[in-house]
Amino acid sequence: GENVEQHPSTLSVQEGDSAVIKCTYSDSASNYFPWYKQELGKRPQLIIDIRSNVGEKKDQRIAVTLNKTAKHFSLHITETQPEDSAVYFCAASGYTGNTGKLIFGQGTTLQVKP
Amino acid sequence: DAGVIQSPRHEVTEMGQEVTLRCKPISGHNSLFWYRQTMMRGLELLIYFNNNVPIDDSGMPEDRFSAKMPNASFSTLKIQPSEPRDSAVYFCASSYLRGQSGYTFGSGTRLTVV
Image 1: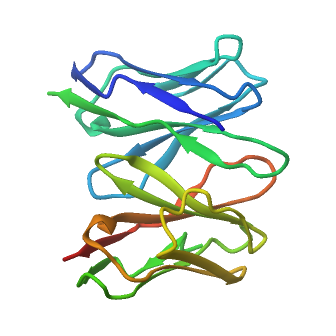
Image 2 (image 1 turned 90 degrees about the vertical axis):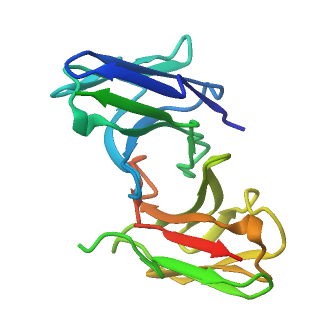
């Protein structure tokens, strides 16, 4: 089945710096890759996603890149702010037929220091 | 829409007792997922349903766990008998089956078994 590896497990940056989180997946048939942000004590929330027919997608300070050949995708946050501090999860769709089952990475705890 | 609604928000129970967690998905969503989140194991997929039919329950840890979805607007996850190692946050999420859209998570149920 699908396996998703996420790195690093923790990341600390200064306010204003960029942060990059990387994920690799195992199932070459996966073609949907969302990213979730989870603040302490709250639910995971979708922040951006990318499909396999696109190499890069951007939404304000957040961007995601996908390399299908290498089976890895990354989240880029520019001009980080203290409110970006949270746990970030990548996921890949273990897509077989119409299942749409998402497998999550282990999470990255991002700390943005003021 | 009120989003995915889970109840209760918190549950404290004694070992050996039966616990029932409830979930109401977003109206119109036809896939429903139960996840368990712990510090050690991250977000684990327990079971998911498409059009009220259980598709994959390979993540259910033991026979003590069972899940049902009697109709499109309601699902339950039951643990009987509960054990301290079941303590975790249990999330329900829903999505559209086709189109590989991201999940919408409920607020979760924090279960503590003493």
